[in-house]
Length: 193
Image (cartoon, rainbow, N blue to C red; front, side, top):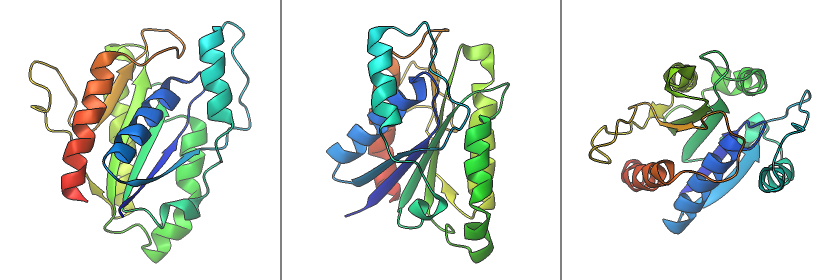
């Protein structure tokens, strides 16, 4: 059985919902899925979260924290981070930096890699965040799995992965477009693994 390892950072749950959808989609395709969040020592719950968003955050915070070693057993690695000024968040960057020992030994070379992010809006720099994640993957020797732009006809999709636009809202539900994109992307990914 092929193994997918999902590592993400989320503050208010948007990236958690994307990661959860990837997890569900991979499981439905017969993958063994391991699901982790990165450590965030500065995390504070937002005071204006709805009850639904608070439930997502509680579920997210109950997940195990990722360590560099969890990546070694994966056939495919899926990483996601919120978009912060066109880049990954500090906790995701700290996790990426902590994998230096894996780079030194070439432990991730040849694995497949997929990226996702959430951004407030299309002007928020989500594509730059996907690019930063892919730059990391390439330096680790992984093979990026692209999202073909014709995956969902009529949709404007970035080739570097999935961007969920939150429109400034905290996590309540994942929009249908993002769900369809993830499902279609996972169908493509299984052809590469």
